[in-house]
Structures are given as structure tokens and as C-alpha cells.
Length: 515
Image (cartoon, rainbow, N blue to C red; front, side, top):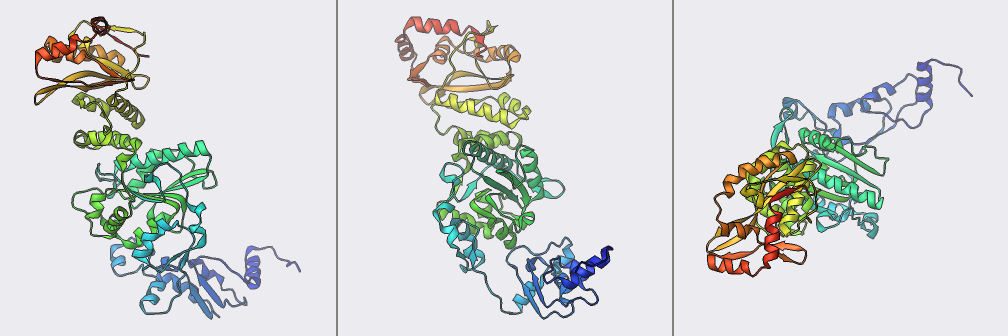
């Protein structure tokens, strides 16, 4: 029959009196008792390890209760307790954990259906004493998914970011802007691949520090959807915010980067366990391997394990990540750039690249990371020997010494990298090198040229000829080395077609806008 009442309380009582299944939170279970209602005999508490003991007592007060089942994992995060005093008093301990400590028998659900076996391997060994088995579905070949090319982007990898530093931001929280740049670049690569393949993928970015979460969210902006229903989505949250969640690809930013191995609350095993068990197909951990290895925490075990399994990769193995690292270091530590730029950017270079301080000062003024990366990409091509073909364009007439050597290549709509071939004397030889002077708007190049006239004014005719000398192999221009012997140098230069040499000198009398 249809009950004849319309007020909210009567409808509520009717539902409670006739329902056989009731779903509610622990705190709202106090409202389940209604005079005359059928007693609740069986209580099931999910995520019981996240429930404070006092909260568990609320549903246990229901009259007529005969059985209680607690489902949870005390090896993952407990309830959040902000008060240090309460935390030290173990106020956040769950009834689930207390019963476990008291020796009550518990039943282990030992099949995991989420993670690829290479992802579950480490947490299973370290946190669960190898008691967890991989379900048949995650062992299937179809569960081996490759969203990006390269060994670095396999099912499980540690991406070592050996540069940058941690800094305090947003109160007492930490962030690492170099890791922010790396994470942003990886997400951009995933999106680019998705656009090409249309392969659905959900991405989760996890960090234990709220300042890092905010910095990554700010960096990504609104470029990517956060709606999990979309074919490509990105969710950036703290470890605590991700408990219970899962994504196709998880990227963890560990943040910590220091010389003494200090990792703070990152060493919490429960927090680490949560972070490492959110991924379905791919888990990529971004961090400073040296700091984590020196931490004497579970993270040391993780780094050692990754190296032993061949899953440890340096970020600069990916050229795009190397450029992202340097672009971020411009704001963080320019000394780090100067000490490591050859290994980061110019591993395959034919030319040695030398930088004037003015270049890095100008790069620091460029706030767009994308423009910085474009400039670094151009420099990488120059170091290999690529050169732009000379095209007719607007002329910037010069009459100084520098006009014979200066080249300028456009980076974006306004900026140009200004560079020359220079001569470096090492031991008993002269070697051609690339010297990068600045990155400036086109209209500032004449002023820069006048400034450099003083520098090149000290060059002899022989050294100027060495700077102008070109050796082309195939489509690439390669550097030349000569013994420090003026007669031998002049002899080698005279072997070049004099018409070609003369025309190259006339071409150098003006700077051309190449576009």
C-alpha cells in the first residue's frame, strides 16, 4: 500500500522501518535508531583503518547489533589528526588497528586487481611481506600499456632529477620547481600522444606536499580536463587526497632535494604505501635519487630496488625533460646550469658551447618556460652542426668588427639568439667553439654589436679568419682544430676556394633578419 503521509520525518521513519540495507557514514549512523524500527543486526564498516576509535563506537551503539565486520588496511593512512598532542596520544588510531595489535584474527584479501605486477612488486615485498598475489587480469598481456615511447616510460620507473632544490612556500610546505617542470613536461607528452593515438588515459599526479600540489596545478593551469569521464584527464592531489583513488598513470613528485638526506614526513611508511599503490598501468616516480638514498628510510630501499631492476633513469635521458630542467633552473640555480649543461643538453654535440653571462640574465627575464625551452632546443641543434639557410630579409647594417661574426636566429616572434663562432686556445691548439652572447629583441642587436666591438677589436686578422672559416660535412657545419702555428693555419685556410672565402666575408658585413 502507499502510505498516506507527506512530512519528512514520517517518510524517514517509514524508510528506516522497512529497509533491509542502510548506507551511511559512521557519524550519521546515530540517526538510524528510530523507535519501533527493525534492529540492525549486521554492521559492515568500510575503510575502517581510517576511522578513529571514538568514531567506530558510534555505529557499535545501535541496539540489536549482533555482528560487526571491519574492512580496511592499517598499513595505509589512518585518520587525519592535525593536533600534535592528539597525534602523540594516538588519538587517530583506529579500532581496526587496536584489534590487530591485540591479536584478533584478521582475514587477508590477498589478491590485488589494480596494479601491473611490476608496480605491485615493491610495496608487496616491503609493506605486505610478499603476501599479496597478482590477480589474473593484471597478468594479461593487455595490461602492459605503453603511453609514451622509451624505457623511462615503462610500467614502473624512477626518474632521477639530480638538480634543483626544495624551497619553503605556502607557510611551512615545500615545493621543488624543477620537479614541477619535469612533471609538466611528462603530462604534456602524454597529452600529445593521446591527441595522436586517441587512446583513453587518466593521469594522476601525487605529491606529499600541498605547496607542490598547488605549484603543479598552477603550472598545468586549465589546459587539461580534471573530469575523469573525459578521454584525457589529469588529477593533481596530495597523498592523503588520493587514498582510495586510482588512475591509469600515476606520477609521484617526491620534492625533497638536499645534501643530508632529510625527507621529513615523506618517510612515513603508510603515506608511501598509499602513493605507490594508486596506479593501474604505469607508475613514474620523480625525485632526487641521491637525497632519497641518503634518507635511511623506505625511500632508500625504493631507489636501490629501482637500480637493481633497471628501472632507474636520469631525467636528462629524455631531451625534452633535459630542456625543461634547464629552463626551470634559470630561476633556481644558474651555477648548476653552468656546471652541468654539457651533460644535460649537449651530450651529442659536435661543437663546444660557451655562454656569456648576459645570456642567462636575459633568460631569467623570460617568464615563459616554453620560450626558454624553444631557445634551448635551438641551441641543441646548433651544437650538432645544424645551420639556418641564409635568406634575404631586412638588413641591419654594421660597420664594426663584430658585424663580421655575429649570427642571430629567431626564437619566437620577438627574440633572437645572438651567437658567433669563437676560437678557444687549449694546450697547443686552436679550436672553433660556439659562443652564445645573448637572447634579445631584433632592435637591440645593434647595441649588442657595438658592445662586442671592444671584445673582437683585440682579435688579430689570423684569429678572425679562424672564426670565419667553415667546414661543412654533408648538411652539418663541424668545428675545426688547428695547431698553434700561424704558418700552418694560413696554409690550411689558403686551401679554401678564395672566391668562397671572399664571398663569406662580404656576407658577414651585415646582419640579416633570417625570417
